[in-house]
Length: 147
Image (cartoon, rainbow, N blue to C red; front, top):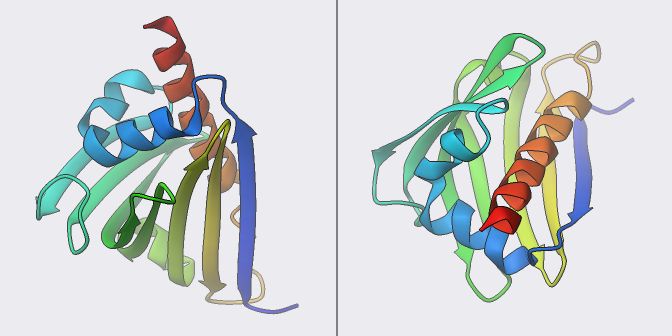
């Protein structure tokens, strides 16, 4: 079994993928209020909102444990509605040498892609982390459908 991996999860969103992307790209500070069961905290450390080079952190709930991602935004593609986040700090790097999250949206779909390199063969695949991120997207969709 290899140490590098890639997981992809997609959900159909009735509000349209562009609406999900807009929240993540321009209003990420609202996500803890939209999805409080999933996301505890969002903070911008450097840069402005979600732009290439911005450094942000997210605190997620995961089975009673807190997952901290400190990310640098590597790319933003407004046409493809895609954002690439490279994890540069937080407790995710205790298990993984590298961890990248890509969010993308199109028509009625939103996709999360995780690219990672495990520190050891015994490190679990981040399936539950993918589930947490997808649950957050479902909460965003529910919020947008209520408007």
